[in-house]
Length: 132
Image (cartoon, rainbow, N blue to C red):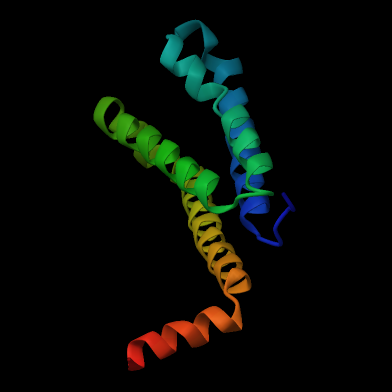
């Protein structure tokens, strides 16, 4: 399988970098207070690194998974620590933008792949079927 020319891997790499900085800083400052969920969130950048690598070959699926994981993280913060949701907007806003870029790029890559696999004969035969 070839790697794609999509910006999804770069966008997910950016998400991983921001999560790495914020997560490791938070872990370093508050590791004694964190439960297992806090530790998982602190090291969640590793999941985004894996998704960024995967996105080199299939950009849409890892982008959607990353957006779902980050949405889950935001929902968890909104339920249990709403003050963290508002306090970290300076980091959360760029991550959301990068995730939107990744998903849009993945959709475009999928559309290009579909268009590249469609042969002119298949298009003509489909058109002829509609006329019949």
